[in-house]
Image (tube, rainbow, N blue to C red; front, side, top):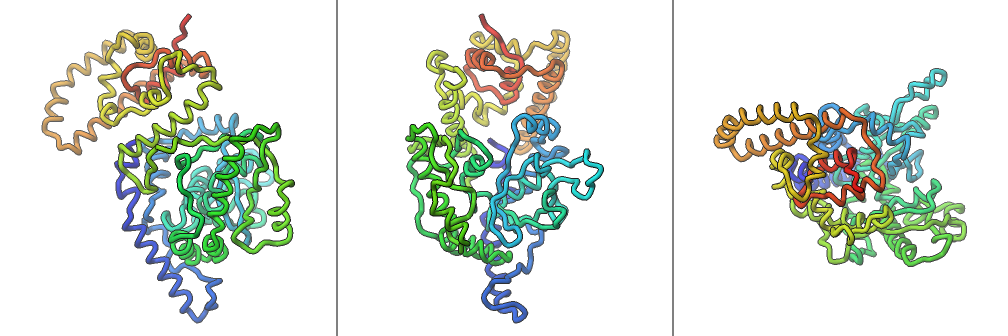
Length: 477
């Protein structure tokens, strides 16, 4: 809740976004004036797509600065992800152009997109995860980059070669999933899902545009033309993306009020609007009886919730939005897990505040972790119960350091104080991680979750404290 807002222009820069738009316009004009290419714009190619140019929305900050397993601020544990993915596969959706056709693709481990295949020694030419043609990324990170590439904001489209396409040497040009599938429940149903929870990012009853605006007619159009994708530019100019989004919202509204045993017809994950269609595609768009059916339910925040700007970096606004989304989902799913919030005496909003505390609370993690609270003694004991000797030794070291730390903090600048607080948080998280490793993690069952909620503290917890309590639940009679 604080890393991206505090990143400021390292992550988002409106000035760089405007510079990118001007560059795209210059590329289109330059290409149309180039006598070596047709004047209709069908073969427009970018003049400068160097990855050294930092885009307005810097995806590299997330993938390399935050998630990187070696040097990230919040490194992704790839081995733990591999184990979890084997139980509950992750599917990453991206909009692509493959061999001249606009397609939605789902990246996943079963297609060998995420991890290197070290078992197949015979068909060695097909080994290896999905890779970007420039060699910048491979595997899971390459798939995430493709799915997050917002046209006009995050740099040029990502060219990937998948394991399944390696034998034919076909490259996919990839960009953000929202282009062809704004709410990716269609791909889930296409792959066999019968019950889908769709998480919406905009409040209930928000105003939806029905005509192409500045983004569709200028930003996205110039972006795709400048990168050699005139058909995708035409798709946006004709309102194809808006049509799909509106169809998604109407389908989800229909599904929420539907009581049929078979669910509702779900549109296929194919581009059927805003472009020229062949006979098969026209038949698919008209014959809705051929569409698969499923039960859909939208998870959407209330209509009175504040809607953030897509480029907002205000920490309070971001925290408020995260809490709102969590509370909505938690309140909806808690009964399914057997949790009676009224009986416990907690609201979903209060749980969200405990899970995502204010940034001021996070600055005193070490003090709060060691502070006994009478009404939360059981939960506190489960967190601190390692060994008395280790605790005494750590407290003794802390006492010796206090005078020196006070002197350092008094002389430090506000920026230095912030860095000291972050270092204290990392040390606390590292200590708790060592504690968790001393005993095998226990699965979070329904009874464990009930016990956790029954002993939630009155003051905010950190995510690491909640994780420890889930893995070491306090069982009550």
